[in-house]
Length: 76
Image 1: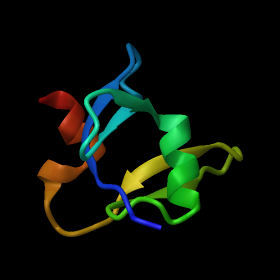
Image 2 (image 1 turned 90 degrees about the vertical axis):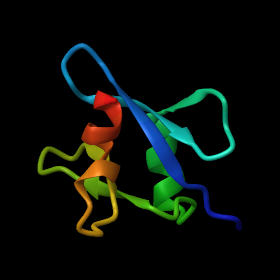
Image 3 (image 1 turned 180 degrees about the horizontal axis):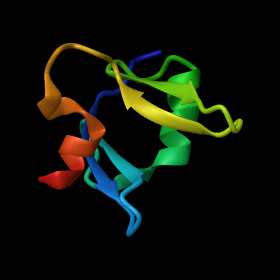
């Protein structure tokens, strides 16, 4: 399976990541779908994380660069 790369992100009114853009796509993908992709190993630069309350969120893989974190991508 070819892995996809997250290249951009959008936030909702509350500041939560709601959508991500994958390399090669023109449209944004809902974060819930991206989380499912990450759980199957389909994203090269992000992974799914379980919260204490049982929910999940998407997080970019650590690499020491702040500019490619989802919150930073959503600010641009």
